[in-house]
Image (cartoon, rainbow, N blue to C red):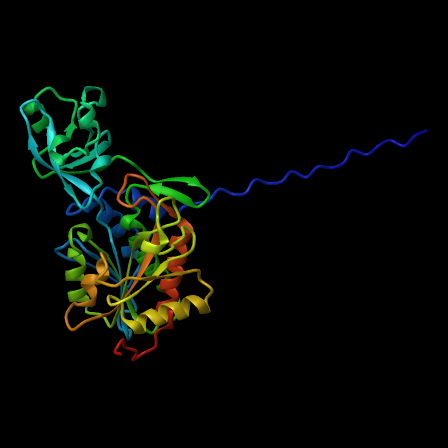
Length: 368
């Protein structure tokens, strides 16, 4: 008799686990914190970080400071700003339509047709930005980018009285757009600039709370960077550290229409961008690059011929001068409602900050 065939056992392959974004990062990204009204981001940081560090303080600018090993030497400051682009209400007309000015540098072509969340004393008010529909424009009008006063916020009300019952002059707003992973570790959010950097510096200090450390390390979550690095000015003055590293976002130039001859070549997923130039102390630059190579942390080098548009510009020249470095997390579509970042670049930034802090020895300074 023919032998019975034994059925082959088929082993099912498990699907790869979905990438998990850190809860602290997600909550920070979703916190609404327009420049000058950073309350929600402050609350997230207070809850996540204050219980895990040796010392924690707040200041009149709204900055948050988290310190580990407070008696250490040298002193090292990490800084990342928690404010984001926003709108501020300036006028309400008789029909209840709300007009505004911008907080930070907006691309005006992207403002209209957006859902917005307005931060008021009674909570969040939902609304939408509007302008004249394209069907009602002349061919010449269609070619123009509208000025800010030609766009309004529509609360869905009938008159000024109804509008004033909901919002006040000076209330601020952000786009109603939350964080989302779209492919693997690549995510989009309205405010990776600079919640990504703020998360990196705070998470680095949280990790440094465990293990040996010679240096005193403080992470500053700074405010009002988008209107002139104002929180960093007071933070650097009050901390007056021996070394500092600002963390912000930088342009990933690997998307179409970015000429590397003009902007350099920086890749999303290529690791943090290490700045070199007059804004950067050469001692801390060489330390960052040396530590990155030793620990095999992917990184990229950027040359900048002038003070950078980051907290580093304010920190470097505070008090008698601070030995300052700058890390930038590669980002596509900066200052749009859907900024894109590879979260692995954020993780590598955290690892590099931790490694630099642990490399410092007592008595080291940035004098050159």
